[in-house]
Length: 182
Image 1 (cartoon, rainbow, N blue to C red):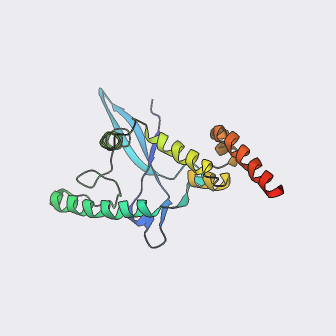
Image 2 (cartoon, one colour):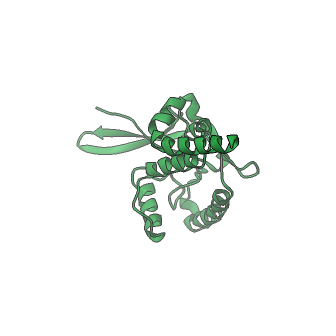
Image 3 (cartoon, helix red, strand yellow):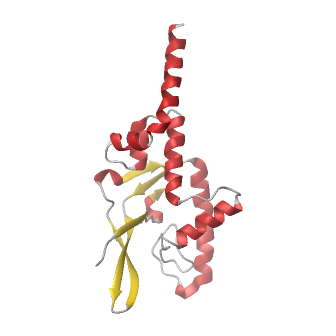
């Protein structure tokens, strides 16, 4: 019995356009659990995103672009240190030898280290996505734009998940309407 789990977006450096400040989402990394005899293991495969709307371009912040430039320099040093053992897959986030990070473990371990170093609460990767969407909605970013950033196929999905943000937004909207008619 095997089941496939989509674990992460797998970005390559070619997916980042520094001149335009965008990230192109066009593939995911999926885990395919395998069992051969008594041996269990996982196989990872790159595949298309789940839906047409999951394939998208995301505009990056200036600070994210700066962090990516710095990360690329560090990765070049990792490549130099790895020497002949480096496997060039063009991954933005990779192991010390250039292979993909196991999304279920390696990437999570790195996130936990960063959170601890920054003295931030312990959260899951997916919580970063929720936090971003909530912050954007609280900043009065149009829900359609939030939907596009998240890659939701329907605006109703975005609104259902983040409806807890709407009551304060509605109050702010009415206050603006009041001011317009004063």
